Image (cartoon, rainbow, N blue to C red):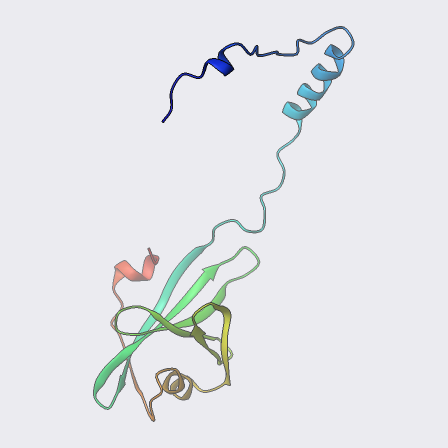
Length: 148
C-alpha cells in the first residue's frame, strides 16, 4: 500500500545550479538543440492505402472468400497487390501484381511461398479447392476511397 515513508522525508533534493564554469556551455548546448533545423521525415511515414477492386471467390457454388486489389500510395511510386480473405475478412494470403502467391501462416511474417501462379490457380491453392470462380463485386464509392 502506498503511504508516507519517514525514511524518505529526511532526504534533500539537490538541483545543480549553473555556475560561471558550466553556465556558458549549458547555454550553448541549449541554443544548439533548439536551433537545429528539423530533420527529414523518416521513410516509415504512414501511406494511404486505396482499394482498387474486389472479387468474390466461389468454389462448388459456395462463397469461399474475397480478393481485394489494394494500392499503397508511396512517394516513390504506387505499390499494388492482392489480399485474399475468407468470408469473415481474415487474411488467407496475398499475391503480388506478378502473380507470386503467399499463404499466411501464424507466427511467420513471410508466410508460405506458393510460387508464381495464375489468379484462379493461386486462389484455388490458398482455399485448397480444385477450381474457383471469380466474380467482380460492384464498386461502391465508399470502399474505393480508402480502407479504414
